[in-house]
Image (spheres, one colour):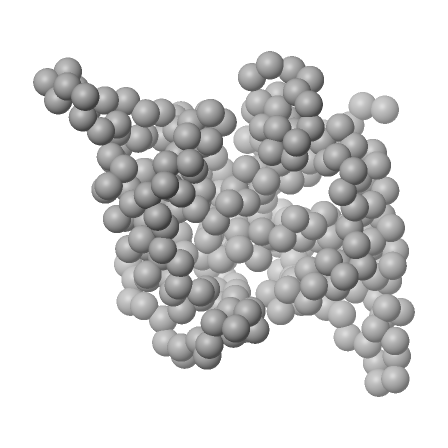
Length: 281
């Protein structure tokens, strides 16, 4: 049965989140927004940004070979172009720039960015809590002094971090239909996997991964799950919060962009998940 427009947008959002799943992809995009950069300039800009956000996550340094791999993949996927700075430079380093599609993708995040601004405190607390739980030490109680634009980009990055777990968006979508028990959510998500096997492959949502993802969504203020005293956690219903509903609505422009680029996204996601290509790029 053909998908309706709403289902296509949701499927598209899931594909875009897969496109942005690597933690460096969004950093590359925002660093290249203003102008093309060569590899050294790009590396320096990304690492400066990572240092500004070290209070939210473990300190990570992007290495040149990792960056080059990411740039080449983003170019293959249509988000970047590599060009030489000019004939007079000879065989100088490539300059990397965003394609029109890459810029459109960034701008499709604008409503999500606005949502993040209104939920900054909860997002910051949740990410710091998981940073602490990962064995990275006690997170600082202070944050860096940022420009307004850096604050907005930091907010978008925080939302992408919350949605980075593979099943997070699918769980949120399922809970948008109303309160449900955890077992019912898992079964419904896995039923969706069967319906979208051409895109998802055989991987299914396990109970362990569900609970880990649920706890992260609860900490981020997107889901409520509060068993009563003496109640078994698996029998207590999960409920999407108003903030969770608002976030799904804020992802609307992302879904619209995805529908416009659906054929390309299908190929990209299938390749990333090790599935055979059905269509050429």
